[in-house]
Length: 225
Image 1 (cartoon, one colour):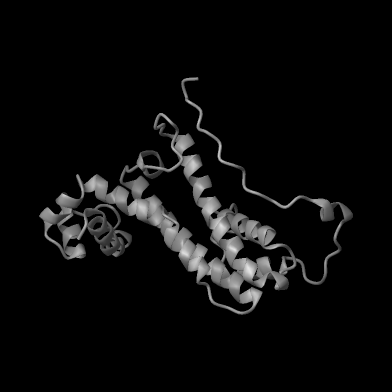
Image 2: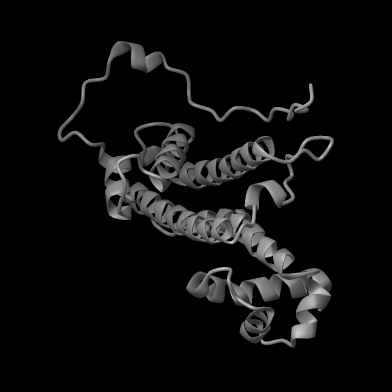
């Protein structure tokens, strides 16, 4: 097995252990959960911190989520929206759990992890974290828009506008201001029917609003300039 594949297999195997016990686990526990010898762990990872960062990277990688969104079943727009919300909700819950564990253990996920949007000089800190969040948001947005395009005729807005609304609502409800995460069924009901019963008048100025878009990539400024 190639080193990259071995690392991915180990990380996949230990995620349930980390969710159950947090990051305060020994390398022996990690090896046992992965079904390999402890020496194999250290041939794949430099140290325990590298293992934990690998687990973070796996959870924060939205490649799997993009595939799941593309494979969301359903013939009706409501079924597709529900499926998309369920996929995003599950991954965001996983991200929230593992980030909480990381902070409790002193591991800096955004700031130590390698990001495709780090600056030309490899800057770390809040800039890298912000760019990474935007990168994840764009990938999720593109996947949702593409899936919604298949049922565009049943949407009240364009697939792009619907995707923007879904991403905005999902990211907002990940850490709701009022406390307590909204149930998936509530999020789906809001996205499908709004929060006001009955038909709504459409103000004339709303008809000319441009379609929402995510901001383009911007280079990370050197903190010393």
